[in-house]
Length: 640
Ligand code: SF4
Image (cartoon, rainbow, N blue to C red; front, side, top):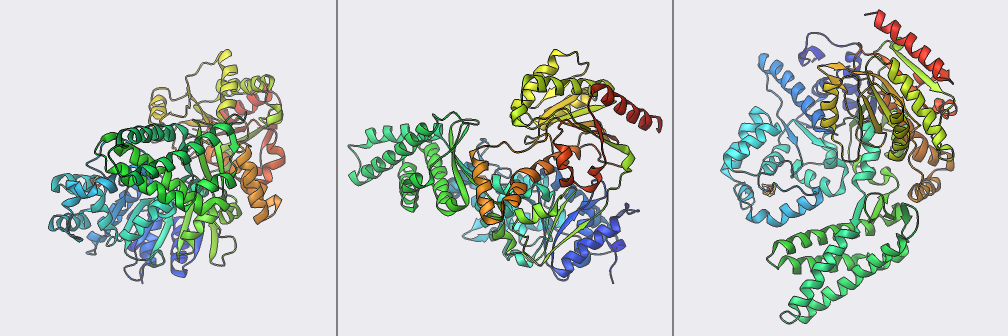
């Protein structure tokens, strides 16, 4: 009988790690879907692989879906550690592959483009691509590809190994990775391989077996509902459609005398319809709001199966023109075709909107992740959904359509840090409630931030509910005398830039928005030490109320009831964002710090948060805030 020590490669297990491995083992053996909460620093990655090896009966593979490349790297590191142990004991090491996107694994096309465009581009040029052609003789793998696969099965399918052998053997790296999937013990892929409709088909082809014959782990699963909604949204910018129209008008003029009139009629028919779509968007964009509902029934008259077919015909016509411009426009047509397909399939489960948020566009946004997730969960037999914060499980189960399943379990490993190393302070004066957003309130929030910056002995993360609130408060803060460097998140900001900034100014302030890039998934650690000493929630991060959200509430109310809809659309997304931001503070047992909530609405909502959040201190003045914070930090600093 095998035990943990047969695979676990390190000398000591961390607190609760054996319990964690047993939970994973039980879920895989009993073929359940397990929501597993375990704190950061407990060693989740190594536990997953050990639990999998203990539970594995035959050659069933493990599929791990991660959100970031960094998480994938941690899996590679831990598999290598286990493999060393297996080799030392004379056993066969695990074969594995890191499956990245075709775009990440392309040697040929260097030009940056959107993922969808790239997929299309690769499909069109593939037959002429020398790296692809070297991979196959007919449909069977070439000798060169087989040699590369044998080498990587032994050495490990890391991105570095795949790219290096691909350039040495002149093979397409993506084809190498894809061909490794079917025979690997472990495949580490990104979420879209399971949860994006467009990409899943490619993955299932590569896997050559059904998902029910695998064991699955979703890492950082608290992101999953939001990821599914975003990945399955579709967008057409007005600028893109206008460019397409200009190109088609031009070829219509040029080719009129030389081509078949039926072809020209098709182009004419298409441009008339596209003009109709554009004028409808133009009309709607006159409304003052940033997000405007587009009448689905009106658009459905144009965006139907016939239109998708027509777009395909135009795409073929355009591809016959041997110019780069034609190529780019065929790509635009493919976006339009995909949008139409999605609209035909999803119009009852999503809303069509005209958005002016970044640039004028027509967007199709699904309402409920469960409508899409069920395509995956209905076809798998065992899966572990793992994260440091899965609260409340009800939200995740319902959002993913697993609320009625009898095969679902939940387990939680308690926090491993000493609770006295964290203080939660709640301001009973401030709020970012829409009706109270004004200059006076922004100044009040800025005054609190100034005090926090005076007494916090380390970096501070300030999380705002939106860019507009952030700007208004930061304008007030900049009028005050702040003795710290400040990094303010922009839509285009890069995480690497913020980390570079922090490596120079380790007590800086990072101002960001809850729905941006900086409030979750980042470890603010420099030289292996967490540098954050305070996380400030400058207004509870409720999703912005707009016409789409109103429709989403209506849709979920019809499916459940008003209270459930309110929780799913408003309250729990806010709770998740708050927990994620606060989670940046404690990344190891040595860490300590303050969580400060500048929003009095917390007092009526705290019961929606985990139990440990029910203990907090209230304050109403900057003096009390200063006193409490100073006392807390002095106590913690003295204990070193
Ligand atoms: S076949 Fe491979 S190398 Fe060629 S364009 Fe596509 S991804 Fe790039």
